[in-house]
Length: 173
Image (cartoon, rainbow, N blue to C red; front, side):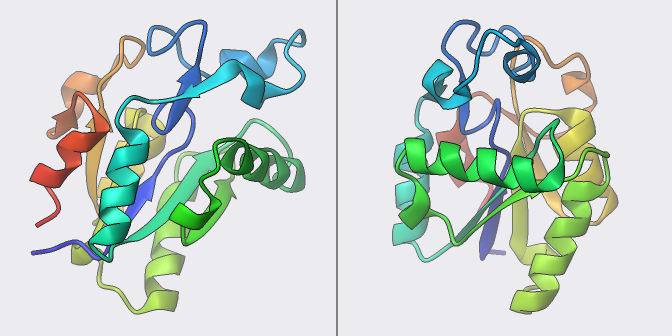
């Protein structure tokens, strides 16, 4: 069953810290007061740009849902700054900073699917965290893929993992 919409986590999935790549969870960057402009310390994950461009060519709706350890308005601003920094605005149909509790992404996905009248079976999320991305999605009945990293201790609990973003094409048709 072909997917109509793909949700992406931001930190650790679409981009990660230059310094630690996928060796350390990216939230450290926001907690370290030495780093003011976070986007300057991030790089796109390999194959992210080409994967998103191909999805758009195939007519798939793309949405960023990224949890931030900031108040909601500030989190929205920071996420949009990263999207602008990486020149991704034209590649995403929606961009949302989700709230700092595990079920938030699932709630956002359900709301977006309802607004767009897309069944859950036509949706997929790709993220780097079992607790924040994979598990909440599966609990809401939405397919999920976990991008493998060195810092995810619960990756063995995920039934479907990928090594790079371009691997998602095996799961969308």
